[in-house]
Structure formats: C-alpha cells, structure tokens
Amino acid sequence: MTATATRVLVLNSGSSSVKYQLLDMHDGSRLAVGLVERIGEETSRLTHTALTGGGAGKRERTGPIADHEAALKAVAEELSADGLGLDSPELAAIGHRVVHGGLRFTEPTVVDDEVLAEVERLVPVAPLHNPANITGIRTARALRPDLPQVAVFDTAFHTTMPESAARYAIDVETADAHRIRRYGFHGTSHAYVSRETARLLGKAPEDVNVIVLHLGNGASASAVRGGRCVDTSMGLTPLEGLVMGTRSGDIDPAVTFHLQRVAGMSTDEIDVLLNKKSGLVGLCGDNDMREIRRRIDEGDERAQLAFDVYIHRLKKYIGAYYAVLGRVDAIAFTAGVGENAAPVREAAVAGLEELGLALDSALNDERSDDARLISAPYARVAVAVVPTDEELEIARQAFTLVSENSLD
Image (cartoon, rainbow, N blue to C red):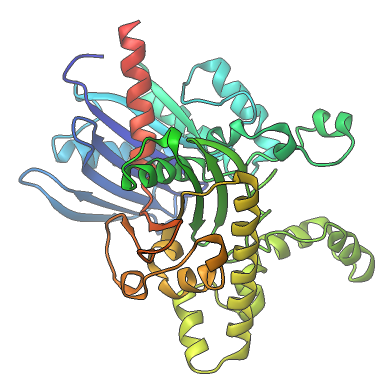
C-alpha cells in the first residue's frame, strides 16, 4: 500500500444486486455511489453517480447483466469513465459487507482462501446472505488479485456479548453441534451509531452507555456499554427481536409446531410467513411507516394496531436494555424509520419520564440530515437521532486494517 492509496471501494453484494460506494479515507468523502440491480435478468439496471470531478452526475445503463462478474466489470467501467477505475494506484482496498461471521470473525479480516472457506461453512446459518457475499468477494478477487479484499462482518460487533446474553437455554451439546446461539446483525450500524452518539455527547465511547435502535424495514436494538455490545435483539437469524416491516420478531417457538399440526403448513411455508408476511405488513398490509401513519390519521384501526404493537415491543426492549446496562447515557434512533419518523420516536419515549427520558417536541419534529439531540433540556438521559453510515464504517475498518498491515 502506497502513501497515496487512500481510497476504498465498498461492495454490498446481494443475491441479484450489488451496491457500491467509493470513498476517500483522507477525509471520508464519497467519490462515487451506485447500484446494480436485477442481475441475471434481461432488465438489469446499473445506476451510477459520480460525486467529484468534471463528470459529476448520474448515469444509467439498462440491459442484461448475466452475473456478478459482469456486474462488477460494469461497475469498473463506470468508475474508469470518471477516472476512478479499479486499476488506480490510489485504491487501497475493497471492503465487503459479509452478513455472518460466526464466532471466528470478530474483526475486519483480509480475505484469503482459508477465510473464504470458513465463510462458506457458515452458509447454513445465513443461507440468504452469505452466498451472495461470497460471490462478490470471489469476483472482486478475480478482478484485482493484488488488492486486499477486506471482509467486514455484520455479526462482529456483537461478539462481545457475554455468554449469558448469547446462549439460548437449550441443550448445550445440540446448540454447539449446530452453531445455535445469538449472533446479532446490523453490527456495522450499531458500532458506527454508538460511537457517533458518544462524539455527539462530547465523550469517549468507553465512557458512554448507549441503547441503539436501528429501525428500518429490518430493525434491531443493542445495549452498548463503554463501546462494547453486551446485548442485541436479533439472534441466530435476523428474525428475532423487534417487530419489523415483514418479520414477526419475538414469537413463541411453539407457534411453528401449532401451524404444522393444526394448519398443515410446511417448514418452508412457516419460514415465509414469519420472515415475509408478518411484522407490520402482516398486521395491517403495509410496511411503510409513512403510509401507516397516514392511515392512522384517517382513523384506520388496523394501522393503529400495527403501530401500537410495534411501539409496545420497542418500549419493552428499551426497558430491558436499561436494566441490562444499569446506567444509560443516551438512546440513539437510526436507520430509515428511526431517523425520519418523529411519531415513532415520540411514542417510544412517552411515559418513560421516570427513567430520565423526555423529548423536546420541537426538536423531535425538526427534519435534518445531521446527528442531533432531541431530548428535553431537563432529561437525565440524552435522546439522539444519528444517521447511520454503514458504508463509511466498512471503509474505515478496511482502511485501518490495511494501513496497519502495511506498517508490519
């Protein structure tokens, strides 16, 4: 790695898509962003936006993109057109989002054959995500075999949970044989937001206890003590925990047995029900919080019920993580709903004054893209809105790792 190599390309490979951002870690600025979607279809589309130089602007190309290799080659062509190609000596690393790292991967990791084989062994506990992540890594390695490929794992931030939080109360031998435990997800977001919340308070992360509420279509909560996760709401899979857009969150496991015996549903049908037809969409038919709030304003009872169930679960986790931490310095709302839905933040905090929580209504209603405090001046616990930036977090971790390795 040369002294001038300060750029990191961040790739988030899905089953039929690739999201990407090129960042300059000299100042954290974005040079280009884009998305390839519907890979493998005749109607594939690449949307690319250059954010620097004379060619700054948005471009689109449509037409068949056969596979991830073709997708990344197309991305490379778009970057090259802006003078930002993968062959640039300024590119220090490619950072990859990998959803599941199990217990082995607790830090960002430079990918080699052994690492890739271990990520493959984790496919049974992340069958929807890890295969696509692996494909993206393999393709990027083939395009730039000389460049460090760094895997940053969604689960890594949560590996600091104590066994009392990570273990399910089932037979230990069975659990260990099949890697059944609570792993947690959205880790890069929770890491970034907890650290940014400390910065907002003017304190070091190790001096702050934070409850982070990542509320998007997928939603998770975490209890962070002194910069380390001690509990999180998602478990073996992203299904556990909060009510989400299409996922049920916490549910009596016997519901699955009941549906098999009484409704005659198969395991796959129940999987689809709980992951894709439950949560807000199961309760009221919508998973867009803006639409749910509009329906509530029109007196829609199902929308109101969905909102009430969502908030009830959210309050339970706030209270539970308050008890886990003992002392809470701040609660941080982030992701699409957390950053933009003032009624959700208001309802989640309402009635928790005895815990030191209170909002300033004017601050809560204010729209802003900046991290900010929205708590009342007399509140003992700060309430913050902190826009998440998982791509920047991945780029930071990847760049730090390759910089340290270059000094060894």
